[in-house]
Length: 234
Image (tube, rainbow, N blue to C red; front, side, top):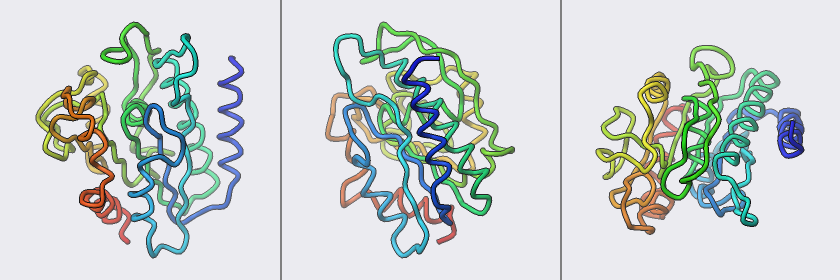
C-alpha cells in the first residue's frame, strides 16, 4: 500500500475517534482548494442554530503538485478516505445524522464513493485511468446513516435525472456517468441533489467559470442549505 494511502487511512481512523455530533457533515473540496473551501457558506448555514453539528474534510490531493500529478489517483484516494472515515464515524456515533457534499473534483469523489467509479479521465483529466471501485449500498451501514448528499458542479453530472437541480440540469457534464454507475447513483435519489448551473465548465460542459462557483454565493447558498436542513429535520 502506498504511503499516501496509509496516511489517509490513519487520518480517517483518527477522525472516527473524534467527538460525536448530532449532525456530521463530510465535505470534499474542489480541485485547487484547501479545506474548508467554498462549501463553507453552505455548511455554516446548515449548522446554524444546531447545538451539535460538525464538519470534516474528505481528504485527497486536491492541489496539483508537480508534473506527475494524477487526477484519477487523487479521486481514488478521496474515495478510500471518505469510505473509511464515514464507516468509522457511523459505527462510533450511531445516533448521528450524516451529510456528504462535494464541489467540482470533490463532487466526483463523493459521487464515485456512492455510485462506484472507474474509467478513463476526460476533459481536464484526460490521459489518466481511474481504478474501478464499488458503490456504497444506501440500505445498509454506513450508507443508511447518510440522510443527505449534495453535489455541486460535478464533472460526472448526467442530464435529466430526478435528483438534478439548477439551470444546467438537462445537459451532461464533461465526464457523464456510464449506465452502471448511473444506476447505482439513482439508488440514492431520495436523498441526493446534483446541482448544476447553465454554462458551468464541469457539470454543463460550458465555458462560464463564474457559473462553476455560483452555488456558494449569497443569493444561492440558501437553496442547497435549506434542502439539506429539510432532510435533517431541522
